[in-house]
Image (cartoon, rainbow, N blue to C red; front, side, top):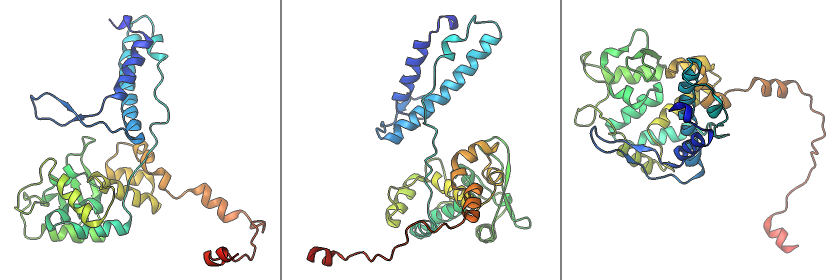
Length: 286
């Protein structure tokens, strides 16, 4: 069957992946549904990026079959090229002023969750499953036991972060969740969606952001402050710095640019002329 694959067949399959909208979450046993197609340029870029990642997995499997001698040639899939210029990072993050407005616009229980995300860079699911025992006040760290990478990590807290977690854990048992809803219940899957939309409306943040943007805000802030990519990767739980560099390297302090601006002389050729721009009223009079 694999031997019958042609480059055209794989190319058609690859293009078809980029056309289909992403799948929406559905309950186990139910027929999967597709989300509403995002027809914007960025929506197309995301679908093509996803298609490229799936193509990479397929090529890896086919190459394994070829190297194992199950296929005579790898020419069919070797000639299929991925979409170009679709992995460009377009990361949304909040400014410091927007962070303050958003926090102030949140209702108390959700405000704690937003504060936790902005001060740790943790994912929503990681915060929702955190227990009081995960906060080590002596070391000033909070432990994420179940991360996306499949291994635990220790997130270093700033002084502000330590004060927040100390307040949220005071008088609670180690088995109690750190973040709870207004009714003291745990935050469940997708419970953050509506509160975030409402908070963005009150804070006048347009377009409204997802909760995950808070994680990007944390990473972006560290990058713009000159924190090394390896340290950011460790804090965010990335397996290596490739993902970190993809999203945040363009925000980091540029050594080459800083060196050039510090050492290149001022030649005095920029044309500093003592010209005073005319006001609109004076222009009209002329």
